[in-house]
Each structure stands twice: as C-alpha cells, then as structure tokens.
Image 1 (tube, helix red, strand yellow):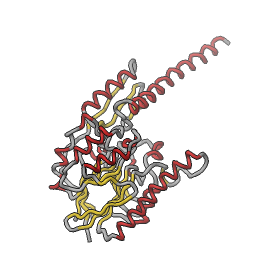
Image 2 (cartoon, helix red, strand yellow):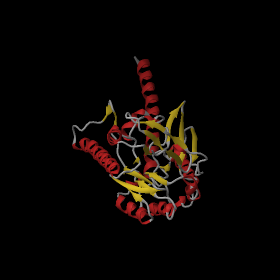
Image 3 (cartoon, one colour):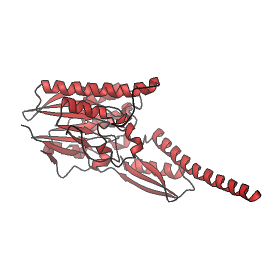
Image 4 (cartoon, rainbow over the protein chains, first blue to last red):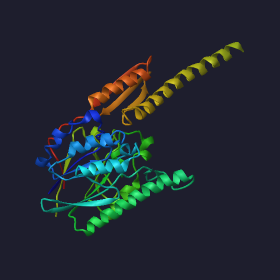
Length: 241
Length: 98
C-alpha cells in the first residue's frame, strides 16, 4: 500500500512561514510522499518561493510539486523552480519522477496544465492567434503528461499518479460558477490520463470546488486545493498488486 | 409627454446606479488580484442589495488585509463577509482507494 499526501493552493507569503511545517512534520507517520499541486505562492516571487522551500526543506518523505498560475505571475517560474529544487523538491513540468517508497516504485507525472474547458463546452483551436495559442498551450501540457505517464509505465512503476494544477474534469469544479470552468481546467488533461493510464489524478486551482471526481475512463480525481480539503494535506491510500 | 419622460429618466438612473455597484464589485475583484494579496479565490457577489464576500485565505494577516480592502472599496454599501483562514491541521484519517 502506498500513502499519498497531497495539498495545493497553499499560497504562501512572508507571513506564512511555519504555518504548515508542524503538520508536515507528522508526514512520516501517515504518508510515503507529499504532492504539492501548484499555487504554492501568491505572486510567484523568489521571496515567496523561499518561504515554501523552508517549509518543506528536510522533510523525511519525498516531495514532488508542480507550479500553478500564481507561481507564474511574477514571470520567474524558472527561479521559483530552482529555489524549490534546492530545498529537495522534485518540480515537474511535462515530466515524471520515480520514487522508491518502502520497496514500491511510485511514478508521478506532473504538469501545471491549463484551461480550455470540457467536452461540449470547450475552447477550440480556431480564429485569432491568441485563441489558438491558448488551446495549443493546453494541448502541449496534456501531450507531455500523457508521454510522462507512459514512460512511467515502461519503468515498471506499480503506482502512477498524475499531478496537475488545473483540473482534468468538471466533477471536481462543482461549487465554482459554471461560467468560469474553461479557466479552471481542460478535458485534454483527462484524455491524456485515460490514454496513458493512472491510479490517481490530483489537482488544485478550484478553491470553491469539490474534492472527489473521476475521469471518463474511471481514474479517481481529487481536488486537493487547501480551501477544499480544509486541512494541511489529505492522504490517499493506494493498494498495489 | 412630460410624465413618461420623467419616468424614463428615473428608470435609467436607477439602472445606472445598479450597474455602478456591479462595476464596483468587479473592480474590487481586480484590486484583490492585483494588490499584495494576489487573491483570486475569494468570491464577491451581490445578494439582496448587499455585497457578500466569501472564501478562504491563507493567513490571519491576509484576512485582515482583505477585509480592509473590501470595506475601502465598497464604502457606503452594505457588505457581508464570510472569510475564513485556511485550516493547517493534519488530517485525522486517510481515504482508502481500493
């Protein structure tokens, strides 16, 4: 059995230092790894990233993260990534990481993802260049996620988890205004997950959404935005064959 | 002829005032995103003549800043707030996915 702890949208700033660390210090008792589902900062500044880095530095479980839209706001995502990596966090963007957890190979494929909406109510790759690029950006994220999940399968991972910031399904957005769903996720991410296969999909971004959902292909989806789960993190136990 | 014109002007004025509240709420949301909070997750909606601001923020300091900004931006309007600080406790159980 693998115990996956996950949280997103912790939105740390200078006044946040130490708020989550006491809970994170309990991780070895209840989880084998910690996933951070983006929006770790408020504006994506190096100063805020250092607060996050300090909060997870030296944790005795592996920490894997994707960035969120807030982490891009200051237009220094590479710097934010570097600061987190220096603290031992594996920051994924269109790639996978293999972790050895108690003798089990766990693969995590991660991308921030992007919007576009869901089947029947989605943006199309048509018209103005900005509109086409909007959809192409999401498509590139989804393609990279699918490739990363497939690679993890070839590396004999017994458990595969898809980690995104934007949502792959509409289920976990319930509670948000339907009009903004296209800005909260895309079915292209779910299609990638279903095509490659995964045991669990974890995302954040939708603060007013719902925790539980499922892709059309039957993969469990969990929205772990902190305002949704109302805890420092949630833990999901996955059984291995 | 005078009466209908006056009525029309009155209706237009009322609609204009209502629009102003909507725009003020929209500008509040822009301000919450743009200023120090970088806050996109808080909802501000007009309900029964008042503005309801609700959501979860990451710290007590953020909540203070948010409420100050809301009351500044919506001065003169009836405002109800339901803003909570994120709970940073560990979970007391795990979800088993079989």
